[in-house]
Image (tube, rainbow, N blue to C red):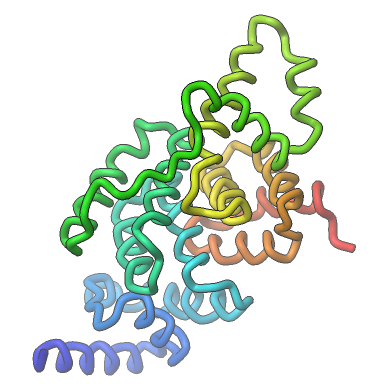
Length: 268
């Protein structure tokens, strides 16, 4: 403990030397108490720029709840295939009181949007951190469907989020692609989105975070901006989401998402 305090004092001295703001230090400390940054020791100029921006300027933009902010950044990390940063933010999530179930639900929801090939390593890493923190696995089931009800309940959830447009999607689908519409209803929405553990507003924000970080998904981003609006997430809420993701996904993906937002939910 004496050594940790000494190291922390040295870190604060270095932070002061490189002009990291008090607000940035406070916000960073909230997520990772007493964390000793390797990058801060080898690349202090970069950490000065990044920490002042991400942990002061960006966080100060709005009053997004810290638990939600961390979950959305985690979601973007998965889609960005940023495993090191994901593990950092997963630990941060647990540090600020996000439940293991909420973390797992973000992971599971990534599967239909990002693909199991890109998610499986994140599942393994998550379970290792759970074990390190003495969190017993497997976690309690959050499933709400059965094989017999997955299509019906999935379709209902899809209609709640997407709206009546879902009927046109079925009606206008070529016969040889109708199975994809059924997969979307039964699998994407039925198997995953109907689960407990996250409310529908949070799930839609998580989905949008995946899509923004993936890139090249503007059509789906527009659809889920509409979906977010349908479940109560207004333009300002989505601006806040895009702002908080900016340091982690970069400007091109953020600006593309903003263009979609302006088209679907234009400023009044």
